[in-house]
Length: 415
Image 1 (cartoon, helix red, strand yellow):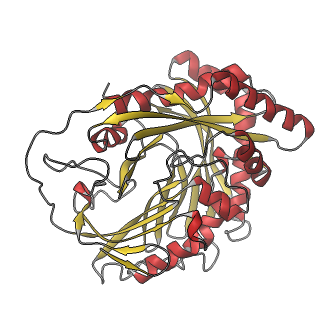
Image 2 (tube, one colour):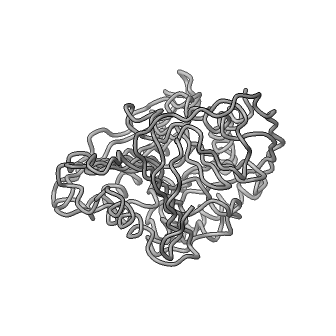
Image 3 (cartoon, one colour):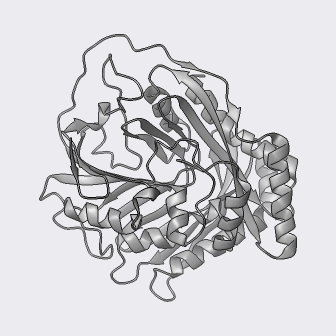
């Protein structure tokens, strides 16, 4: 392994993405598990070989958005102008890259406090992994290590969560914010290899950004249905999700009829329109679809589609600065909501509520890391929450967060 430059840039031996699990987590003694990078093109899955990677944490200093753009350009993926047609991307053998940006890094880009200490400090705040196509490596056969997952320990009690909801409602009453998103965390000890468990998340129904990203001593598994930002042919799209009910006929009818959920959703759509307007050609921001009800596992969720034409010369760094962290997991106004979140949440958001996906010349597809879990060397971590408005009921908000994390925890346990 060779370290390059002051920002933790590492050039690694060629490792197939299908079996590049973190050595500090568990050693693979059986056949390589199939690990898909979230949002990677179908033609690339199962054929990705790692070529280079960048890890960055807030303590390293610098601008993570600029570092990501510079690193990608240095490795054959120029993303300084997303409005230009993609040409020559295969000249260097590189097909694309995985990009992960934490919620804390997004808050830094927005000029907001970055929140409480992270419960999984082994995770970087930025990871960029450049891939090329290569032969799949087969590991030595053998039985997989036994998998055991212990009890989940919450970072706050239901009473503390409810009190935080009431604190947000009081802030709304004072006019400090219109809406804030609150996120809770839980951790559970494990033994065995966490990668198969994290990989199972990608098979959950509606996991548009299903997949796994790994590093030395950490791994992230994603089942997110939500598009943070997508850029194709100069069109910028975001698909905010806000509003949740059980996936029953009665739940769907209740979601469609809820004035509270619709008001909360429209506030976030307006916020996303404003975010895209910062990087769009004047007058091009439109809402293609508003409050469409779609299913994720055993939940109905409301989703909208906001679109704009990218302004001339829009690059990856400016795109990340405009859209991170996502409006649906922060609130409105975004900066005021982030400041409140940092004061109320007991631990950092870790791998959740950030960005994870695939980038290539002329194309960006990043999911918002809701319905996401992470592993360090000792524990699995999950996060879940929801948006709080004046009409929110504290006990209902606690129950909604539990409903969102239940399929994740069951899948990780193998049920």
